[in-house]
Amino acid sequence: MAMKSKLTLRLDDDLKERAKQLANERGISVSRLVEDYFRLLLHEQTGGDGRSSEGSVLPEASGEEPPSEQALSPRIQDLKEHLGKPAPAVEMNEDTQRWIGAAAEKHR
Image (tube, rainbow, N blue to C red; front, side, top):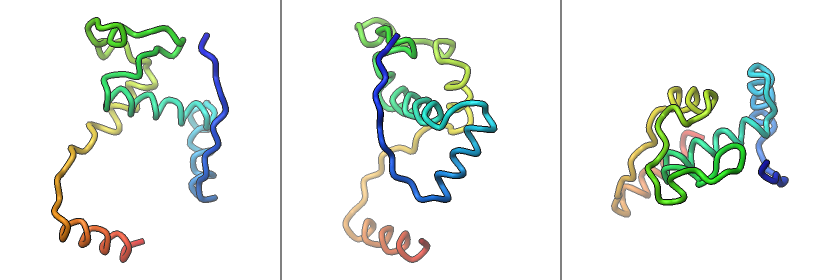
């Protein structure tokens, strides 16, 4: 079994309470919810984090073919279906970046 270590996250109080409620509705801990989300992000961004949930090295980490969709746990597969594909990287000029920053600040 993989060794687990502690990670401290800082969230605003409302978000923290909503995360606790979501985890409770799903019958899991907030830690598990966060862990599953990070696994999903790593899988989407890099083709996997190199380790299974049991801590064993996945095929893509050893140079073999990446795992099929069935290799994802049911919980991760469900998250993936709900979240969809990550947004593509977009190159923006300086004016566009300033405009987006101003719009984000305005609508906080």
